[in-house]
Image (cartoon, rainbow, N blue to C red; front, side, top):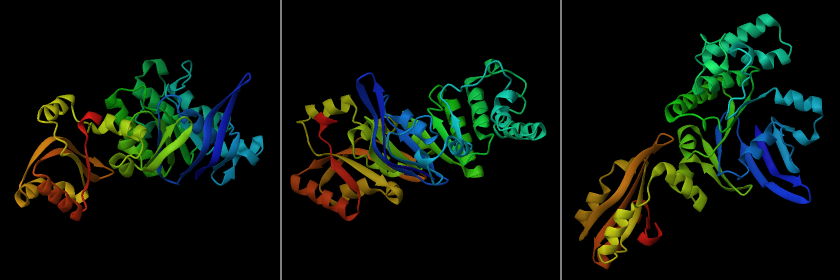
Length: 343
């Protein structure tokens, strides 16, 4: 559906060359919701703008719906872009036009008959929950309502791909949740492929099937949302995950451990799926001559799978602690030692 094949993008500023994208190899499958996350300047916006040819890649192939954009004529690119809708962070609505006129704009440009335009616009306004706002102007709407107008406009030409450029960054949490629910509905009912960029990991967790982490114009990590959240491989990914999972040891707990002879028998234990509901810690305390001190933790759900993250201190002799850890390995429980000073 969308395939970046070793895509690069270089901007020239006088004698200076700025590499915005470097050797991007990424595939978004038909019908999935794919998220790209990264800090400001990571190259996210350039990446998504290459899909609808607002930016032309300077290396590699940008393939959309089986078409290599670099080989197409202007007319052919225009036809491909009809299948791509885009939602913007700041809505990009025409304040001088009514909601109806904003949604109708792409259809007017495509020279659709007026009666068909009217039918399509009202159908979309009903879908996004704004059927009573057709004749008002954007300045009379809330931020969430403006974004719903933007979504309706993006869907006007019945695209197969929907691009979301920080679509919820300007919205409050409650409104963000409602917009994400609408995007999920669009994906499910219209089978539209959604590619979204964001710097909010909560958005990725809420709606995406897979995610790529960007840094300095490169993809540094990629996988299912569950894999990246439960086992982040890079520090950047871990930083993003921590903004949502809140699984770092609080400073007060670290000081308590340090004051207690600086015990190093502190472990992070991940409970995934069915194991999240097992009384594993009580089993450890019964089977081995150790005490289990739960320092911190939480249980959440990732893509419908329970995921628990506990930080525990195992108090006992070295031999008994090692036996307990061997027992965890037999249960295929994922764990790693936590060094308090590095947390």
